[in-house]
Image 1 (tube, rainbow, N blue to C red):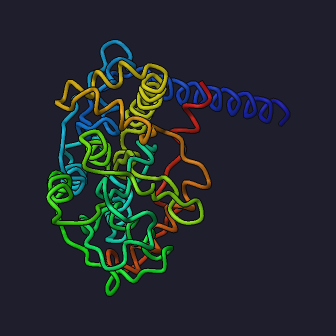
Image 2: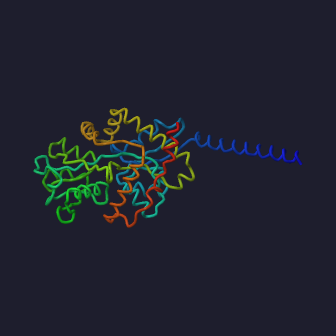
Amino acid sequence: MKKKVISLLITTVTLVGVLAGCENKVSNNRATEKVQATVGTWKTAQTLTPFFYEDFLTKGDQVEILPFTNPGDQKVALLAGSLDMTGTTLPTAIAARASGEPIKIVASLCNKCSALVVKEDSAIKKEADLKGKTIGYVPGTMHHVLLLDVLQRAGLNADTDVTLVRIDFFDMGQALASGEIDAFLSGEPYPSQAVKEGFGRILSYPYFDDSIGTINAAMIVTEDMIKENPGKVQKLVNAHIAATEYENKNRDAWLEKAASFGTDKALLEVSADNIELGWEIDEMYIQNAKNLAEQMLQLGMIDNIPDIDAMFDLSFIQQAKKK
């Protein structure tokens, strides 16, 4: 009887060892398997980090970066399987989850980047002075949410105290310079361009720690990608973190890359101080995302608030930190 028990124990220990060895082998294969990935982003200074990924992937890994101009198109391409990962705005990610779309945020991309601009010679000195004025905006964007937050804090009703006019980001500067609008709230480099060309002045930066803070855009993948190819996601997140750290330590290389996409480097130098490249996601970031979702619900941008905690998968960031 004792011999049978001992034999059984030996067999069990051996089996556990074999299984553990198999598990380690799978884990090692995941870490060393070659990656071929397609990542979406924009060709703007605040969102070009993926263009540096290849410098931080291992030999044999390949990544194709596809540029987009619309965050909604990026999300659609991701869900269709044309992209393995993409950058997108937080409002786009929240709206996707509110619609039941299976996306997950795995890293931050950029923070800040917004500003409220008035004419350089305007009598507007504070936000409350916007009463009775015409303001350019793009509906459904992060900047729309930030603008309404600014107006509310100034005691102004967006429906009765000001006139909001839909204007594309590319046209806001001209509209301000010509007097078509009195102010606009948009992302860089348009606020800095207005200042550099002499027709605009930054009235304020719409960052409030007790509401949305400075969050802006993030990197997302699908739930299926995480389940079926976590090794690829991990490699991309590792590259994202390394690329972001490189840009932050090598400002000139970052701005040279941005300038190669057609924006004047002198303008980029001005706007860079209002751009924060990032990858980290902490408790405050998630709380700000929850506050953003609340405001989107009030604006009618979504009809329900999704589980914001479940929208994030921080395991890849946590794994990267262990290295």
